[in-house]
Length: 65
Image 1 (cartoon, rainbow, N blue to C red):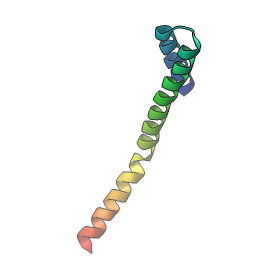
Image 2 (image 1 turned 90 degrees about the vertical axis):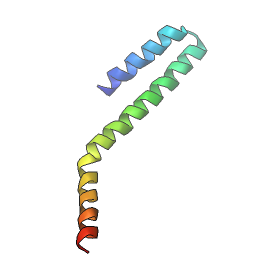
Image 3 (image 1 turned 90 degrees about the horizontal axis):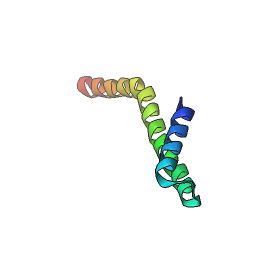
Image 4 (image 1 turned 120 degrees about the horizontal axis):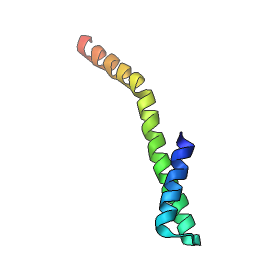
């Protein structure tokens, strides 16, 4: 799914900038930044249960200590 999203963003930016060397480089850069942001968000969502358990453990430790 990430690959399809990368290709769609790449093609969309390339459509708006044109097929030039600058347009291709800009498309690669913008696509990379979007995929980086979406990947970081996905990792955050994947780790969210563990982060919540750690927060709960720290809260309980402070409350009962």
